[in-house]
Image (tube, rainbow, N blue to C red; front, side, top):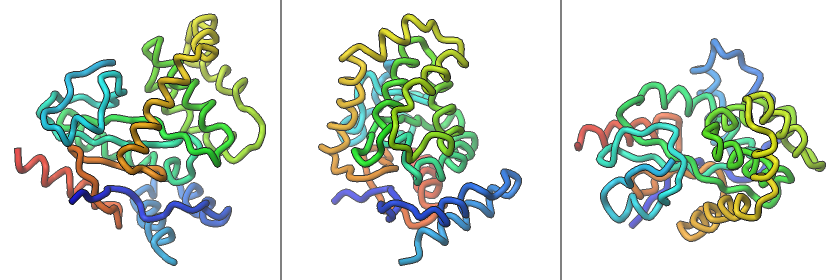
Length: 231
């Protein structure tokens, strides 16, 4: 029976909770993660990893932030660029990626939730950047600036276009990609795949096709350590 590696919080975060998460200085990152979990627990095509379970969480055009080869443990994260929980976990995930650099595959898939007004716009902008080889640049910008545009009820497409200029994209190509139906279809394909896997909220993590309930910040690293030791 499958388990799920995902936080057990899916409702909207309160303003005070969000502030508690994001206002802690970067130098206190470890403490920030502990606070985060305490608060929330209260009431370019790459060879696919072997094994059907891992492969079913991936597509040939999935975006790899880290690639260590088809035999390495593979983490797949379904995320929403406007999701508060995704934004809160972002620095922690980056720290984890650095720790396991060269030893794991880390794959990101789009799962823009309907309740977030600019989630789809953000995902389309990131996918348009990917067409020019700047997926990760735009990915990081979205999370680093999430406080500036998240939770709004007006389109942030122009802001995202500014991000494209900031990272040096060919703007004609970017505009064409944003307007192209295929770009939105690529995002929707990830969303549909997530729904087929049982994803209902973000972030949701899979490790080698298996899902485990994430109850604390060490659960995913512990699962990775176990997978690496079993190689």
